[in-house]
Image (cartoon, rainbow, N blue to C red; front, top):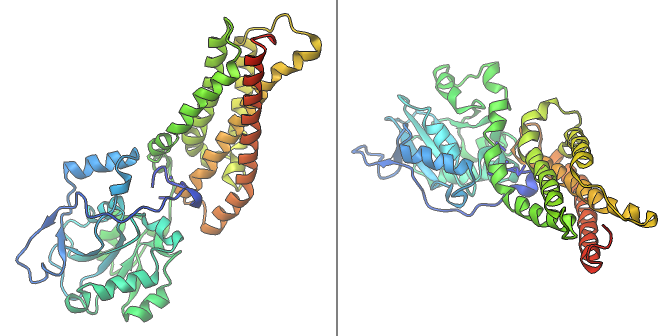
Length: 384
């Protein structure tokens, strides 16, 4: 899992998948053992500590994302031998932890590839989880000595970036794509590296989408702050009703952000369309209808307005409408980076086609808000 951005996040559509600098191993328990392989490979625990779990929770909130990588190299669980499988993983901490916690009672090698702290699926799409990188890590590790003929088991979600035939040629090893989910690895290994249909099937269930929402909301924090400032501009002039108008526009814009960051992921499978930005049209329409009803009920009626200038009072409402639509569409498009519903080419096509429309719509809305604010201040409330 790709919070497009994306991540939230890890997403992102691909424009929101951030390149994470490599950092040293953090919170990965290493146990020194008397085994001969200890100096050449590090033993890692299969049980996550309280610190590991707290760190994972923090990452889900976007905290410590720049320290989310583990040191690339060779690890092991149990007491692996020359024929024990080599499980290949990204050096994103959550990916590494998801793998090792499922390996209790299993003897295996774990080869951690340098994916710049990015998860398997996103790294494969970005080209950092590829045949050349895996082969380089195999040659640089002690596998040639410790497990010269052991098969390489790669995550199925890395298949978009790894050419199995090329990797087989580069390493001289058997290359197998394992299950989609780490929890199926014990059964996969017990079956002699054979997958069932269920192990091959990628899912993106409600719970899998919901777990990505916190980081999406955190990454949207600056937009929430900006919406308060824009709402104040739309609420001008500073007359007795300005607080009511500010509350209304702030609620409208913040609801749009919440819809894009949290509501859209939850209802994603129910929405028509291929592009995520297009899928956002239906929930945005529902929100706009609600906003229109609230505007009629909440906003105070304009008084003492010249008929020829009455249309000017539509400016803040139209501006809010445009900004709301741009916010929902952008955050929905950004979720392509976290979704298994998309692929690299599809994401690039959507970004190239939708982003200019989204930014153009937002720019028009901002210009209208600025014009309204300047006009309201200049006339000292003469329009209301």
